[in-house]
Length: 192
Image (cartoon, rainbow, N blue to C red; front, top):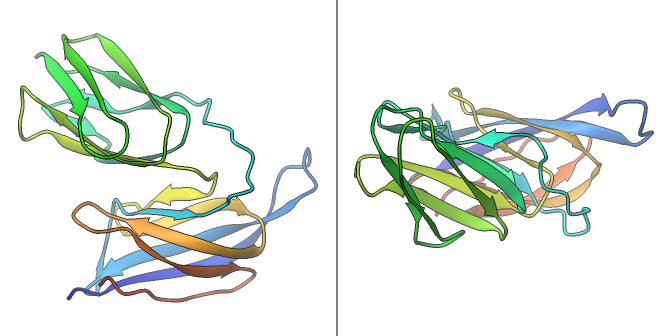
């Protein structure tokens, strides 16, 4: 049994003047067996949040026979571009869980798009290069983040409330618990 510790701290911040709503930046880190856990997705349930997928350009690139980034979190309804920046053909597909799709083979400079229209984990592969793998976690909330190389993350502008949180990392399972967003909180969870 491996333990995973998730330490969260809510730090006050003010959302820009166009909105007089106060929110808190939730800062935290993810560790397992005393080591940082990069690429861990952390999200807070917000069942009453207004649906609004990201309008930013979101990309999972293919270069050097790898996907970049390895782990991506998006809000449900977000469209992700899959450009081929390599000098070889690729075929991006996901047949299990989450969004199922097959983009077919396409050459350097070509780009395909996928809209992640339901929550869940999509495992990405290339049928030409079996060592290529990546993950897209689509979440039904505006409050999410992916831990950096030191296991640290920030979820910006979270309204004070009690939330159910979830975490997932490659090779792990989805973990859940409760978190009260206020001015100063810390807690740990253990992976089963």
